[in-house]
Amino acid sequence: MAGGIEVKTPEQILVMRRAGLVVARTLATLRDAARVGLTTGELDQLAREQLAAQGATSSFLHYGAGYGVPPFPAVTCISVNDEIVHGIPGERVLADGDLVSVDFGAIVDGWHGDSALSFIVGEPRPHDVQLSEVTRQSMWRGVCAARLGGRIGDISAAVEGFVKTQRRRYGIVREFTGHGIGSAMHQAPDVPNHGKRGRGALIVPGMCLAIEPMLTLGGEATVTLDDDWTVVTLDHSRACHWEHTMTVTKNGLWVLTAEDGGEAELTALGAPFGPLAD
Ligand code: MG
Ligand code: MG
Image 1 (cartoon, helix red, strand yellow):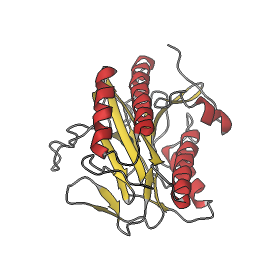
Image 2: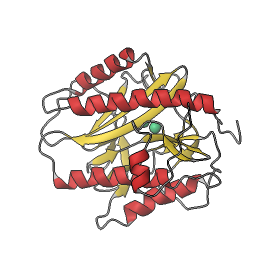
Image 3: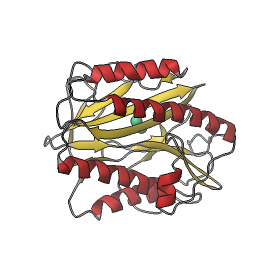
Image 4: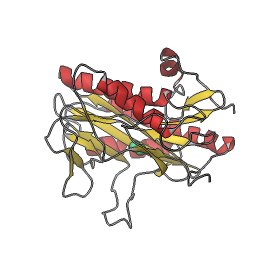
């Protein structure tokens, strides 16, 4: 531990990479399987089968027990349209044009990976396509802003700065943030999606971070539904969520929940790709 932040050994990060690949492959399977007429519960069941097949367990199932909320009952969070995060999969049938965010976490040998992606089923609305793409790109700008000796605020400022340079105004959800990750899913430090460069915790080797912007087509205010989990936009505008777990090595950046470790996106953005060797 350093300043309340869990510093991982290279060996531990290599286990987190295994968890990250379980997450990447499961999310890809869910995205490919999703279609109009399927229920969100059926997608969650598919994720449960993927976890079992890959010898991993869920970061999400029963999460929150002891925190005054009902334990989370699923292995995915599936948030549709005006739902931002923490949607509970169930009987909801995916409909034409739905904007779907799937968040998923897996544990391998005690180490977590956490990632989310968004997609549209059926005929997409152009504004939803743009919302998802801006959210995804803001996540990658945040990833690329991380460097050894830098600060968490550099990531926050990069996410916010990218969103603010868009011609359209997007809401940036502030009540939920990215986070440190390792032997638990949620650890210090918080990684907000707005902030100033040079502020916050120092970025050091062995730090692993989940970077997860949540944007809306309207305002930034949120409401939690009576199920104690599902977070929606107050103005019912559509929302989107993308997330990756990453680390910073002495050679560069490594995105643990991307199938290619982030090489393609990092290279396209001019950032150094720096995986640890097995
Ligand atoms: Mg997540
Ligand atoms: Mg997360």
